[in-house]
Length: 220
Image (cartoon, rainbow, N blue to C red):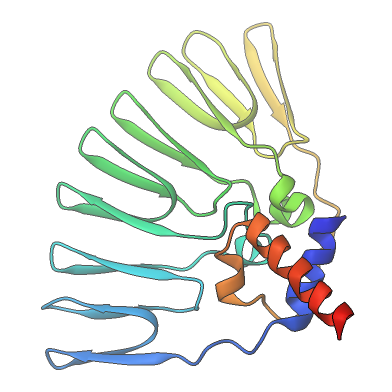
């Protein structure tokens, strides 16, 4: 309930989005947010919630999906970019392994390496709107060289299957793996997006600041 009230407060009090900025370098110009430039290109994130980074003279940018923006995790919404061996990726919970790099698209996603394969999984957008920051964390399961990530994963000797939502179920019958996910029936309507500076803060900090503001108002 407190998180819901906090979210409503953030939405109600959120200021307009900060103005976009433009960056020019080496005869190239780009406009947006968190702009970065290399010798060969200039790029910007599309939203104030995004991020950009430069690796090996290339600029990589990433913007979180709306579900992550409106439902930030307890630790705050902080996308990142990582690079290794000439590769780079941006997102959340990034993993570097075997000279590869991969990131989830949301802070609730997971990445794992198995037999030189980097696998990332994110809960569907509708599920994030339904559960918000209380969504159960997905997991990954392996069998031989196979790997899958999601919920209620089941495996036999060489195959793995997972449900894509926390309400989904997987069963094994007569050496057959079957998974089912009920449809998401919850509708989530959002108004003005939250303040980019606020969603980057941990939930505990947002709550402390909200309580301090309420005390200050009560003393007036």
